[in-house]
View (cartoon, helix red, strand yellow):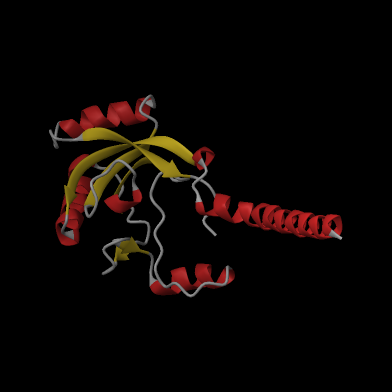
Length: 179
């Protein structure tokens, strides 16, 4: 009789262990979803002429730089957002449309420059979207791409004639799907 009880206990312990392993295997993918995939980031370089916590100041600088440098201003449809975490957003109807396609209800969204829109043009970006930037600033950006890109180097030299503090800063940009 005693042997039989031991076998039942062993069977129960085996079943428990199988259940624990099964739960672990089933939940394992959930942990990887919450973690950033390093393959989803690319290092990009950004030509900056100003950073400020005031959007109107950044906008004034961007408009002035457009005239002085004869470089196109492209705000990418972004407007200031009172949410200090994202700082800028396309109009609410744009974000809602995108969000609803994926089952969300968010009326704010911001994609950092550098994903697919490299080049020489003036824009205002929000620093929270960039890993190595100090948080909470509107940044007047004149170019984005790779530091070795001759256009970026040539533009930096040209920009420095009007904005002596201009510089190129490197940051990782998230390149994978956002939904």
